[in-house]
Image (cartoon, rainbow, N blue to C red):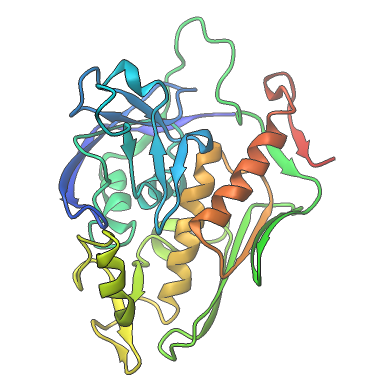
Length: 309
């Protein structure tokens, strides 16, 4: 299966949603089989953090990744080598067909930019994507180099919230949300990559929140960088910063988050991914189940594999 990377490097800077700290991200082309990975260029040794589900270390209102063997790079008294709020950028890369990319970052959180994946997608479009070069003496590519098909339903539930991977002939994502707030209410959206472009249907959808939760979240040390410039906010009377880019922008953004979280598998298995009132935590639980089952096959020696049969 052909692997793709960026046609050239690009750079963007902005404020992190939770940290409120400005960071710069520089994304460079990478060779086939290396996948998408972060490099903390601000730390000694420039530790690498793979954008893989095994590296997930936190799912509180965003997805955080952690480097292995942190003691090789920093003093034991320092905090772990992590990078947070990775889901929008990773969704943009995966949704644009970028399999391999080196993501250099000079801090611990990816910039939120406007709260969507649109700025990342536009930057990718500016440099284009090209076929990745194969490294010398390489006998195989990434763990998902061959097509993977979900053969039986795989579910993760918590109360009435769930996320599932269902057998399907093509990859599809469907998401539902249900809020008491009338500005949001009950929304559903389904996206099939073969039928709609990520850049048009999903990437523009911005993160959103409820006005009555802002103070509570900030008291917990979260959303320090959140504002009406990078997030949709609503109260009981409606949206504080209209207009919306879609009438169902909130559910489209939740689907964007799901795409970003499942991108940690490398390539998406062929399945119908269905979620309702889910969270980053449930997304990652499903990704871990899929990763474990994928690991049962040596796909480098098969033209395809079926998960769950």
